[in-house]
Every structure is written in C-alpha cells, then in structure tokens.
Length: 398
Image (tube, rainbow, N blue to C red; front, top):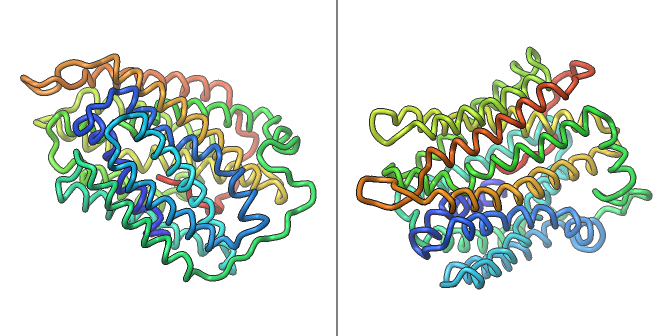
C-alpha cells in the first residue's frame, strides 16, 4: 500500500515543471500554480477525511474510490493542451489524492498492535516507491513528456483496485468535543509561545521549500543534467540514511538546534544549486540533492515529534492536522505562487545558445528567504525542556 501510494506521487510530481515548460510551454507562474494544487488538496484534506472516513465510509473503500477517480483525472489532465483545462483537472485530482496520505497512515496504524514501533518499517516503503518512480521515469528519458502522468494514472488505478483487498477499517465513532483543526481547542494549542513560533516558522520555511519541489527537475534539465529524475532520488536515499541517524542527533541537539540545522541545510542547498553546474562543479548539485535528508528529516520529522510531545493525548491528532494544514497546505500554496512568480521574472540564458532561466538569482532568492526564517527562529524560539526521543507517529510526504 505505501509503495504504491508514494510511487504515484513521485511518478508525476517531480517532473511536472519540466513537462509543462518544455512540452506545453506554460509560464513559470502557471507551473507554480499547478504545483500548488497539492497544497490546496492538503488544506481540504482534514475536512474531507473527517467528513467521510470518521463517520460514514470504511477507510479502505474510501482510499480505493479516491484512487480510481484520481486515475481517470490524471489520464484526463495529461491530455489537456491549455492551462485552464489542465489546472482544473489536476486540482480535482489533488483533492482526491491528498486525503489518501492521511488515510493510508490511519489504516496502517489501526491495524497495528504498537504503531510507535511498527509504523516506521511500513512507511519507509513509501520512500522506496518514490525512489522507484524517479529511477523509472528518469531512466526511460520521459521527463519532458506526459508519460509520467500516464504511468501515475495506471498505478493509481492499480492502487484503487488493490485498496479493496486491504483489511476492513470501519469508521470510528466521533469523540464528543472534537471539532477538528478549526476548533477552540486547536487555537488554544497554538497559544503557547514555543508552539506559536514553531507554527509560524513552519509556515514560512515551506515558502522557499516549494522552489525545490516545483522547479529542481526543470533546473537540472536546463543546465544539461542527464537523467535528472533518477539523480534526484538520491535525496530520498539520503532521507533514509538520516532517518536512521535521527535519534542520535536528537539526543545531542534537542528540538531547537535540529530545526535550526534543517533550515541551515535549506540555505546551503540553494547556494550549492546557485553556484553548481553540470561540469566540474557537479559535486555542488549532488551536495544540494543529498542534503534532502537533513532538510526533510531534521525539520518535518523532528517537528512531528515536537508536536506529539507538546500535545495532550486527546489533542495529538488535531495538533498534527494543524501543522499539516499550516505546512503542506498554506505554506506550500504561498510558496507555489511565489516560486512561480520568481522563476517567471528570471527568464534568461541557461545553456550557451539556449534560452532558459537565470537560475543563480532564482536560487539566491530562495536561499535569502530561508535565511530570514532561520535567523528569526533562532532568536525567538525557546526550548523549555529537552524531550526524549520517540518515533514519529505518522509519516509525511517527502
């Protein structure tokens, strides 16, 4: 289940910018808006999941239905020649796909005796699925075509059918007093200084973060890197390695400096991209890709643990929903819009004799945004206590 779930996303999303720019000749702003549809789906996800999975429909059936509808929408999106029609189709798809991220997590953990100890070994297959998708798409040279979306559509149909064979996971009765991510309880949770600063920093850091997700593949292709999608899977391989090392770092650095190190890694990554090239400075591009393990694990996984330890037992699901809404929803939505505007503003020479983008200034802009968040967080966040390590309760997309 996890392998298929993340194979689908990894197959189409990584190379989306390259196809839309080279194949359909969409503008940078249009590419940013298209990449931001997943953020809109993430914002709508808590409400859709709460409405159906918690009350009316068995989780495995809802996953199956959403993936089958999603397969048709991806197939349709791959055949749209204009931005308006493509955007409409991919937005509807995102509204189907993004809820399945939390639904697959929920289904898995409800079937486990000890999710804290069992979930990690299951969730890691999602990262393997993302890697496999990138290696296939890159290895076959499909990055500038609609083929990745067709592959994702076929895998989504397979996932939809397979989902109906998963263990029965019926709706749970609603807990009295729980009103979701917009409740008074949720606002009280954000009222403490440390959580308010963390939530604000999480929102702000996801703005420059979207430069990486939406435009790195296009950048690597424009500077002449062969099999860019395959090389980008080095980031997920790095993620697996740093996940193993996370407890060691956490015990020595604590929450604050884990998060600071993650933000510093984002700044460093963008500077490496700004100065690297496909020739003698290729090591800089590799360095930027391989920093993904620090960027993702040290911020998002550490953040999940921090939220889990700060929230009471009855608030944990709501608290994680709030942070997901702030980061993968609002932060990445703003980041998608801003990154598209910036990329559109810096159209210029890429390779000799070719017109592409002025990537050095684009990455400087992203690095500057990340650096401002880093400095603000460093001087405003206070860690009241050194919490002990606990494995994250739920995996987030990488």
